[in-house]
Length: 209
Length: 76
Image: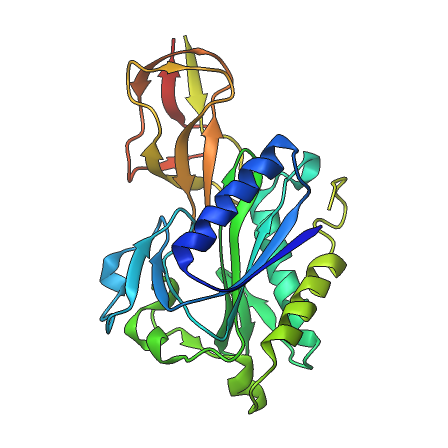
């Protein structure tokens, strides 16, 4: 697995990088790649989303993007992981891949001693009644893009400007909020990379990682 | 003439929404071209065409919900 750290990035710039890498992975010109970044503040609307789920922006840029799902917020302190992975053979299961991402999120949080879980009928990773990681992907030529956003030290206030995922009453949390301390984002990057390497893409699938 | 249908996506997923068509009626399509983007609650994905031909008719329009096996388009 190749690894690219974009640091603090502009959403559109990072999107461009995702598309370039996705084309290369689709052509077989490079191996599966994990792109890691923190975004400058932005609100994005997925393909199933609606502007009605944004109450106010306070100057934050709003973008329509080609992933599944509804509205979400990205900003500094949030770890964003874009796995650009070619799905082959039995791994050509889009919702299987979403489950994989949730498992990666759970594995990552367990490294901090936080017990997280999935919720039936609701995507993402949850700690008790609060959502800590959001998931939304795109797939082109069986190569995945977009991915997962995990709140580490994220300022959670902008989540109150939107209806996250378009679902009523969703509470959003962060690791900082749960552990009552600010965390080292570089250490978090190492841990998420480890989790992507540790969790099997599909337990029984014959596929390249 | 062939019907392009919404393929089986994953276990338990029965339907998806048409996001947009990359082609319009009358366009020439090559085998392997991704002709329509579909979306579910968490994934957006593109459906490739298995044959070459002319996109004769779009049977499901942007915003429509389509069930697995339902016809998306007719290719001639």
